Image (cartoon, rainbow, N blue to C red; front, side, top):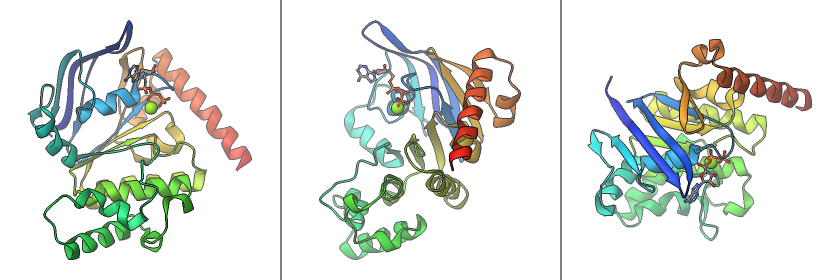
Length: 254
Ligand SMILES: Nc1ncnc2c1ncn2[C@@H]1O[C@H](COP(=O)(O)OP(=O)(O)OP(=O)(O)O)[C@@H](O)[C@H]1O
Ligand SMILES: [Mg+2]
């Protein structure tokens, strides 16, 4: 399978802090690839490189067969339509309804209002939130806002979606709903996806075909979930064990 997203020996520093220290990996077309790592390790930095919001100091980034490393903003606009980034906050417009938020990326296209309305309805239905169409973001829970952000990402009819911490700060039931949505996007729409998370049991395990663990600027593990659980790399082992403890605690209080 060809890679839809590929990092080739990518380096990124801020001042004297090295965040990405020679990272290489590929995401196959149609798969869901999770990047694991603790807070502050560089997961969001990595995701923003995929759509050219940050540029590497060294190395190449390839998306859908195109080298985007030195692409100008105009060419990147096309990449950002094809590859939608869903932020942790959802980044909705507070003054617009759910339906208007989902329609927003379509407003400066040449689609007519009928076609826009049709698409918005279709995406809300796909994400199973048609009943929220008229609500304002302030009326929604964090989890619901994320579902709306996914519907808005779909409005552009992308080939890939990147999710930043999709299950953080939501209750276990809502996490399940979001995980189901992520899987549905893969199976029903054939999308290529990246999911950044610090959560194995509540997220990566439920959605990912491949997982990689970021530690001190490098991937110390890249493989299947089964291989991660069997890994004897000390950092991978510790990460898996801590996740299990957190998961068991949550179950206790659930
Ligand atoms: N534009 C920037 N300028 C300077 N430093 C930055 C910039 N963006 C990120 N950093 C730093 O890079 C490091 C990695 O940040 P990043 O947001 O990618 O972490 P993360 O793994 O996503 O963490 P979290 O799980 O908390 O979201 C942090 O120390 C952050 O302060
Ligand atoms: Mg982050």
